[in-house]
Every structure is written in C-alpha cells, then in structure tokens.
Length: 391
Image (tube, rainbow, N blue to C red; front, side):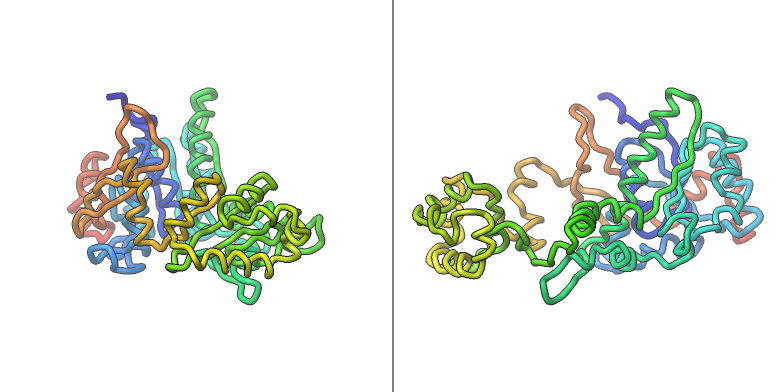
C-alpha cells in the first residue's frame, strides 16, 4: 500500500480548543506526525468541555485522534531546550497562543525561522497580530457576532449563532490549506514560511455573499430561517405524518416540474400569482398555504416519491440521530472505530479520500501519554524533568 501524502512530515503544535487542533488533525489524517504540546496537569482545555463520550469531551475526541500528547510547562526554563530540540526536527510549528505569548516564550516565528529556514510556522489567533482588536477575547460566538454571521442567521424575529463553531472551523481549514501550500512551496524553494490565520479574517471571508449583497444593495439579506429571501418555494415543509421536507425550487424548469409532480397543479405555472420567481416571492404566504394544504394529505414517503419523480431538489430535515443512521453514510461505509482512553468510539472517515490508501485513524491520546517516549527519543530524561515539574 502506498504511503500517505504527509508521511515523514513532523508537526509540533502548541494548541488548544478547536481551530488549531482541527488543522493539525487534518494533517495527521494525511500521515503527518503531530506532537501535541499540552500543559502538565490539565492539558488542552477542550478536554474538559463536556464528558459525553465515554467520560470525555466530544470536541476533544473529534479533533485529536492520531496525535502524540506531550506535557511540557513552557514557562519553565528547563522546557526551552526540549522545545528547541523538537523544533529542530520539525517541519511545521503551529500555535494559537494569545498575541505576544509566543514571542515571550521564545517561540515567535521570526526567532524560530532565523535558525531554521526550512521551518513552516503557523499562528492562529482571534483577530490577527495587529489592529485595535488584537488583544480582544476571541471565542467563536464573539467572532460570529463581530463578523456579522449572527445578524444573517436565524429567523426574522430572532438572530442566532451557527450551531457549529463556524469561526473556529473556518480558521482551522485555512490553517490546514495554508500549511499544505507552504509545504508544496518548500519543495520548490527549499525555504519555509510564516503563516498567520485569524478567526475573524476567516469568517469575514465566508461572509462574502451577504457583505456584497449589503454593500452594493443597500440592505442586508433578511433572516429567513430555512427559507430564502429571494426564492420560493424554498425551506421546510411538513407532510401529513410530520415528516419535514426541505425544498429548493430555484428555476422555472424545476417550478414547472414541482407543479406537475409534487402538487399536481399544472395550472400554477400560468397562475399570475406564481408564474415568475418574483411573483412567487411576493405571494409567498398564499403559495405556502396552498402547498401546506396539499402536503398535509401525503405521507413523507408519498411526498418524496412525487419529488423524485419530478427530479425536484429536496432533502429531509434530519435530526442528529437520523444523520448517524444516514443511508448515504451507511452505503459508503463512512464510519470506523477509533480507540480513546475511555473506550472505542465511532468516527467518520476523513472527507479527503485517497484511492488505494487507507485513512489514518489512530487513537485519541490521553494527557501526556507520549511524554516519556518522545522525550527519550529526543535525548531527554523524562524522570528528571518530571521531578523538576517540567512535564
């Protein structure tokens, strides 16, 4: 079997929470060795977010498989030579300290790369290394609020944050892709580079459509729940048995098919209330009332038969237990088992698939599980450092 693309790449990461650990977990998925540096005693604070997965945090087991956990008190003078040795043999250094902390610890990008020109450094922060918000707290909800995501999410009456940590995930994915591009660039130039990714910049990029809409249209796109401000029928509808179906009828061809097959009202195609996209939006309440009345006489299965027959864009609105049993995931064998300190867990395979090469799905580490092994490998006496309180 061929090796994974990042086999032989070593990543040292001083990381916690979501964004940086997500980036390095994707690197580990592709074969990189990730040495996760954690605080002695407590470790990555995401370990304590909850206890829902065999007594472990759901965030932590999601983000930290296939890594080696090494405890090290970076504030101790005795930790400096350990970190120096690790970084001497690293290809990538990732950190998401608060701004200025890396420099105070002697781990700033400029200082590290002065003597390690091939090293790729990646700093993940809330707002970046400059500007008036540089030192502001940057939890995901706060970034979602500052970047405007909350303002466009939810219903007309109530804004809402996204149900997943969108800012963290965005930054983690940009860090991941940035590191991959830097590794590719190093193959051509022989030199590493310094990367900087902020949660705020990442989420503002994701806000491109509503920002353009508001900046050039004069008003923001209105919040509409699962509906759409400029398309109808679009959103969640219920069949008579309570099955929720999400529709996305986005062009006149689909509208004609919807009229013929889904509601069996071909006359709606020429009904002046519904004949054009703008007319359907203008008469949305009447349209939805008519649709609701027809769907109420159908079961979810009967409705889906009609929608499939007309090749009409639709989906089930699934709750999370339904997603875990999703037939598409089952048919494509997208689940596997990953060991954790609390016992094996079910995990989805990485989204990036490589034909003929099995995904790397190694264990989630216990805090400090690999400390002795790694320190010995790099020529240090773990027991001596432990007596000094360094690990």
